[in-house]
Image (cartoon, rainbow over all chains, first blue to last red):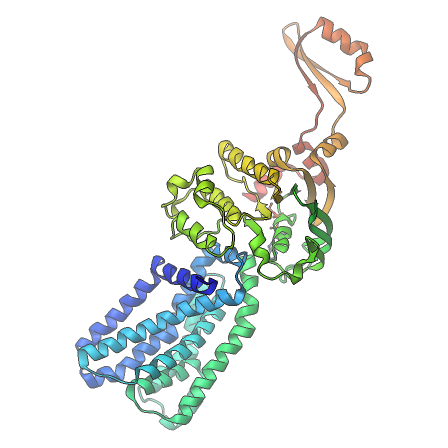
Length: 239
Length: 293
Ligand SMILES: Nc1ncnc2c1ncn2[C@@H]1O[C@H](COP(=O)(O)OP(=O)(O)OP(=O)(O)O)[C@@H](O)[C@H]1O
Ligand SMILES: [Mg+2]
């Protein structure tokens, strides 16, 4: 087994042992329960929001929780003295976080199909969730690395959601005129939300889709390169 | 014998700090020796270890690892070294064995986990979650972790801190065996017992400077009081007398005492490492124990 695979398997195993994956599955189950009581049309309306909340908020929360648990355990430090590169360690953690995002998309999509028989372009949804998941994993790292404990991290997440996620949710309720949507795309939350909604509803505005994908990809790359990578080792060494 | 580490004029400052924590130190760690870095709390011992294991990188000065620049070493460096940290470093929700198997999986060469864990008395607790381990058990597991990859150089930070004498003995025996098989050890501690029983050479670190690099024996010779103390019974009460060691064979007073008095003990004035620590660093050991709490 190569080292990256081994790292990812370790991350996933810990997601289970530290009860993070079970918690994430439990929230997904709550959403599914919700589908039972609403019409197919309503379900299709609300499904993107649920996937989006999981990708853009839950995954940050879970990444932060696992980061601070590991910091408490002191294990990030031991990982740094193993013959693996920092890039591999960060990649494995990002993969684990994306897995959580994809897991919730899969559960929601399956419920939508099983309960209401609704289908849509799954490949596209998967792609969008992966891109949005990577960008939000990067954001999750930035928030975690800049907070001294989980409580501080929660505070930062609230702030992030207030600035970026809440406007996006308001928008999805039709409070803001749709012609101003491109302004909202600056918020990574909204870009993610736009992409996910498009895939689930099957309504595409090509320019916005391309802009959203590019923006999130570039944002993820820039954050990993300049805000996560340089800070990660420092953070581990001082622990 | 090669030189495992050669450190020249090493300076280091934490980004958050206004002055250097390490203020220009020089030393060599020779292959096959146990090198002890001693000093009071906050002197910079752990910082020095973290620099040598490449956890802290923005240092100034030169460090060579077996002749190669440390900064140029890639992560294959970690195939060759074993690092024991001063704080617990394991996944608390995984069992001890799961932890060891996870870490061992990343190395080309691995030691026998069962053998190591049996030796430190943890094998029977292998399926217990590390979170349920006692402090001393975690310390022992840290040691096993450091030995996992049959390292060429072993770094140990306060390796016996928090261990009962029996377990401390076991770990010290393992360290000595490791050295006898050719291993090199860099050990930081403020426990003088460790130093007397283990170290081939020691360096005293005080406030970011090294002030003595020597062998325990030479230190004792240098700082030892060359005298003999005799305790004897004098009319039921205990009395004592001290004589200079030089020319003791011709000291009549001493010889008279031996012939006439009821001698209870005779000690040469060997200075303990503990006293030497105080003389060299100017810091009382219990004073720093209080600080550490
Ligand atoms: N992350 C950090 N940021 C800023 N200063 C630090 C950091 N870590 C340690 N220091 C400071 O550097 C100095 C040396 O600390 P270090 O941990 O190396 O001491 P030590 O000799 O290992 O002490 P001890 O015997 O208590 O383990 C201390 O003054 C400490 O406050
Ligand atoms: Mg220390």
